[in-house]
Every structure is written in structure tokens, then in C-alpha cells.
Length: 227
Image (tube, rainbow, N blue to C red; front, top):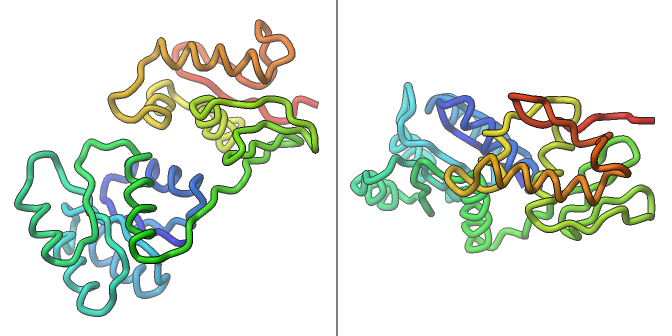
């Protein structure tokens, strides 16, 4: 399943692409309206996440041109309290809208709902593999070979998912909080407690972690290849 993400905010587009990627989507990015139309024609995505405020061609124009040729599902992104934009977008043929600021998980939920309504088959996230460790997201299990090392809660799995997917990279506290809880759902204390609980499940000695490394003043990292 392929998703075209159109937003001139590069950082936000990357976060949405990462979240959709972990949900099992192949993602394509465009940062202006003209490029969006070119990518839509060349890549034939199954769904489009479309910001309204774009350079070259705005989201309304992009939506209008796509709807003149095809019924590809479109989820529009708009800023808070701009009801006229929402109404205009829906009248042009958008299938749903998400108000900024939003949780990337909300975008995934909206995209999946739109695809269900269009009759598309469900997308299943694949496993995350680092060295000999495998995170099975649907089953909420961390495995080594056939052995289940830990059964996780959904929040623990989300934390481990983003850390393992970015193995060897330091992820900031803010990025982790936003990914796990959304833009206003978590805080540093909640993240610290979540890391503590996860370490108790996956580390031989939680007081001397081998995998979940704290980077003081920045965030956390998943350490690769501890053999």
C-alpha cells in the first residue's frame, strides 16, 4: 500500500512518513503542489495526505485536479479553527481531514479508516529486525529466533519500535514523546517510567542496559550489535 505525503514542512512530513512506514505503508514525499501532482501521476499512490498551504499550487488546487481524473482517497491537513477550509476541501472531494497540530498516529488511523471505506485491504506492519532481535508488532513480542524474550504493552512496543527502527541513532525526548503519545499526551516523566519498565523486560541487568541507552540531556538510543 502506497501513501503520498504532501507538506512543505519537511520535519512534519518526515514524521508522518516514518509513522506510516512503520504501519506498513510505502511512502512518497512531495513538498509543493506541482511536485505532488507529478508524484501522483508517476507513482499512483493508494492514498494522499495533503496539506492545504503549499507553494506553487495549494492543496485545494491539487485536490481539484486529482478529482477531475481519479478517486484516489485524500486526507487533508488544515490548521485549527479554519472551518471554511474544511468545508471547501470536503466539497472538492477530500475524503477526510486532520486538524493541526495532530498526532502522527491520528493520521495513520484516519488513513486506514479512509482506505477501509474505499474497500482497500488492510495494511499489516512488518517486523522490526535488529541483529538477531525481532520485534513482532501485531503480537507485541520481542523475540530472538523462536524464543520470545518479552511480551510488551502497546506503549512499550511503540517505544521499542521507533528506537529499533532508528538503531544506532539518538532520538530526542521530544520526538519519542510525540511518537508514543501524540503532541500533548505525554511528558518526560512518563517517558522515563516507560523506559524503566521496558528495560526490566529486555535487559539482562536493567541497571546496566546494553540495548536501551540513555544519552544525557538529549534522549535515548537503541544500541546495535552487542555481540
